[in-house]
Every structure is written in C-alpha cells, then in structure tokens.
Image (cartoon, rainbow, N blue to C red; front, side):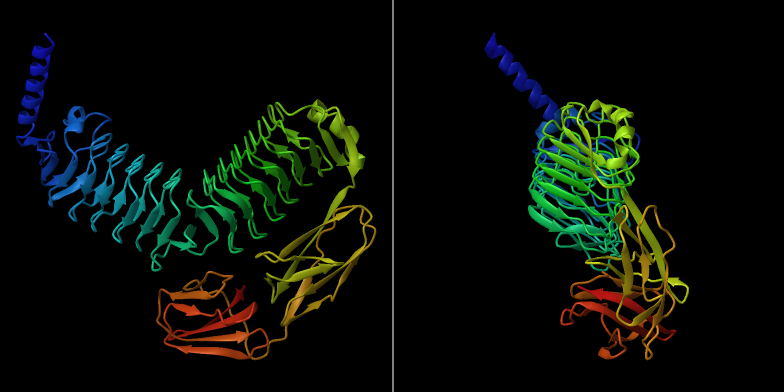
Amino acid sequence: MKKITLILTASLLLASTTMFSQRQQIGTSNTYWEITNDTLYITGSGDMPDFMPGGTPWSNISHTFNYLEIGDTVTHIGSYAFSSCYGLTSATIPNSVTSIGECAFSSCYGLTSATIGNSVTSIGDDAFYYCTGLTSVTIPNSVTSIGNYAFSSCYGLTSVTIGNSVTSIGNYAFSSCYGLTSIEVNTDNPNYSSLDGILYSKMQDTLICCPAGKTGSISIPNSVTSIGGNAFSYCTGLTSVTIPNSVTSIEDYAFENCSGLTSVTIPNSVITIGNFAFDNCTGLTSLTIGNSVTSIGYRAFYNCTGLTSVTIGNSVTSIGDVAFSDCYGLTSITCLASTPPTLGISVFRYVPDTVSVCVPSGSVADYEASDWNYFTNIDGCTPTIYTISGLVTHNANPLAGVCIYYGEDSTLTATDGTYIIYVEENASLTLTPSLSGYTFTPASITCSNVTANLTERNFTATSTVNTLEIGREDASVKMYPNPTTGQLRITNYELRIEKVEIYDISGKMLQQIANPSQEINISHLAKGIYLVKVKTAGGEVVKKIVKQ
C-alpha cells in the first residue's frame, strides 16, 4: 500500500510540474507565468496584477523553483507576487520594471541575491521584509521612494547603499536588521546623508537610522536636533550614546530594546521623550532626565529591569502610562519638579513602594497628597529650582552660539538666540555673554537672591568685524554638515559657485578657492567659528560655520 501511495504522489508531482511548464496568463493582465525546471519565468508586457497574500497561481508550488526571471517588458511587480517563496534564492529585476509592490518578496528567507534594475522608482511597503538571507542591497539612482518596513528584519543584511534620487524613506525601512553595520548614501542625494554608516537627513539635523549591527559607543553630532522614531531600535551591541545639547526631541521607539546600554544622560535641551523611547533597555543602570523635558511618553522606560536610580528634571509635568513599569531594580528616584508631575496609569507598577523618593524640600506635602503617595519614603532633600532665561540678538536677529558664563558654569544660546539657566533658590550670580567678534550690551546682568523664575534677561550684540558682515539667509546656498569636523559641502541649486573664501572671526582671510568642487576640506583649520563667503554670478552670501 505504501509503495502505491509513493508512486501516486510522484505521479501527481510530475503531472503538476508538467502542467505548470506551459505558459499561462496571470489574471486578465498581459503577463504570463511558467515554471521550467527550477526557474519561474514571468513574461509578457505591462504590469503584473497585485495579489492578496497566498493569491498567486504559483503560491502552492513555490517550493518547486529556486530562481526567478522576469521579462524585460514587464513594468510592475505585483503586491505579494513572490511573498513566502521560501525556495527562491536569486532574483533579478530588469530595467523595464518601474515599481515593486507591497510585500512583493516578503518572507523569501532563502533569497541571497536581489538585483534591482535601474528604472525602479518605488519600492513598496514590506517589499523585502524578512528576507533573512540577503547580505547586501544597492538601491539604484532611479529609486525615489522606499516604503515602510521595506527591508525590515533582513537579519543577514550587512550593508545598504542608497542612490542619489531617494526623496522618501518610510518608517522602520531598515529596522531589526541585526547584521547591518553601514548605510551609505550617495553624496549627491539632496534629501539624505550618511556619516560613519548612520543615516541622517541631508542637513544632519535628524538622525534617522543607526544600523542595528553597530556596537560600542556612539557620539551624536551636535547638528542633530531630533532623534527619529526607531532610530536606534534593537541596537543591542551599543553600550553608550552621547546625546548633545542640540537635541530637542527623542521620538517614539528611538532606543527600544537597546539592551546593552548601561547609562543615558538626557541633556537640558531635550523637551519631549516619546512613547516606548527606551522600552526594554534592560542594561540601563542609571538615568538622568534634563531640566527642559516637559513630558515622558507611554512606556518610555518600561521593563528597564537593571535601572537602580532615576533623576527627573524640574520641568516635567506629566509621565505617561506604565512609563517606569517593571523597573523593579529601582532603589532611588529624584524628582526636581516643585509641582508633582501628573502620573498616568501604573507608571511605577512593580517598583517597590519603599524606594527612596527625593523631592524639593518645600514640596513634600504636595507629593504626599498626590498619586506619588504610592511611595512610603518621600523626603525633601533637594532645593527648589528656578530658571533664568533671555534672548541674545544681533541687528534684531537671534544670535546662536553665544556662551553665557555664570560662576564656573556656562550655557550656549540656541539657534533661536535663547538661553535658559537653572539655579537653586536664593542663588546669586552674574551673567556674562561672550562670543569672539562681538561686544554685548549690557556687558553683564546680576541676579541676586533668586526666589522666582526670571525672564527677559536679554543682551544685544555688536559685531567688531569690520571687513566682513554676515548677510541675510539665502535659501539657495546650503552648507553642511555644520558643525563639521573637516569636510564642508556647499551647494547652490540656482547658480554656479565661482569662488569660496574662508575668514576667521576677526575678518582675516584664511583660504580662497576658485571654481570649487561641492566638497571642501577644512580639516586643517583649528576648532572655532569661521565665516564662509560664497561668490556666484548673482552676488555674495556669507555664512557662519563651526569647525569641531
């Protein structure tokens, strides 16, 4: 009986293979399919139709082919066209194809090689999701958009090269690619850039994606103002990340599952910490949240089981649901806010109620009368904190990078010219602004016995540079990255750049470059602030840069 069954099974398999070796139409399209030996052929012309999961004619026999050949007159690869074709090892997408549909190759975990033709303009959502065998991907210059999760969970992927025409990269496009160590972007791309294998916006003000295979320590450049959603998600090999004072927002899932991180200091510049931002960072042992943060998102530090101490800045007004839930290793919490932050649901679930909670001395009763009364050990052990803030202007415009000295400490004005200083109650201090090339009125401001928040401690700057004056902002001229460690890229999308001159802050010319290339090397310059004059047929523009 078993022998008859085996003969029957073999006969059916032979019959099915023979049946599918004949060319058959795909739906009502002008495309056709057939399987010959171990290859699936897609021929005909025009667009393949889009499919529902498991809806292709070959979905039940996808194990019978290892290779895919698509005819050079096919223009679209349909959604789910080759999804879960587990036996597929190689695919070449011809130059006739202009779009790759949603989930077109998702879960092809046997796929080790995929060549994307140079006419493809869009790669759909989840197009190569969970293609765990892929090791490298080159996205050609024709591609303008990469969909959400397009290459997510491609565990074997080690490098990605992005062409010069990509204008849109979807959410989590390269998330959970644990072997990925480098994302490189064509230098001519006007929307994105890369530095040390990390993906940034063109001006490097948003950090978009750190490859999950990165290990050790990372210092984020101080041009960055936002750490994007999922930017460091599942970077389990990272041990420390330095967040500069330029960063104002940490978006949702930014450091989710960075289990190797041991400590994080969130600087005073950060205002918001998103949902799930540090979710499941089990290696964290200490955490300091800066004084500008106003809200902590849902599950922001959920299940950070190694966390033993937390310091929460004095501007926090709300903490989201389960933000510190399951942080059962906590032994001390310091909250500097005079008014108890509003707590969401189960913020400190499974945190022992005997944890030492340190709050401003004058606010103990307020904390004990609020939801914080979950804790039985609330003590007044920190002084009340007040703020001193102001604006620095030059020719009625905000002036960034001014150092405001007060005692042995200092702070810098932000890009909008503002500054903020945090002081203890009854403090007395003198504020003195300083920036090479400028004098200030008044020369200093004294604040005595501070007992309230002080605002409008403003300064007006006067330039001492006579030979060169910084011009108005010209949107057609771009300089980046700024600050820079050596390479400065200058572009003008309207006119050819004829000459570039670099001056120190006193107006002395240091370097002159005629008919420059787009990238200039200034690595020989000392750290400091410089003025760059760009000459075109339309005139001149002068901009300030910082050399680190």
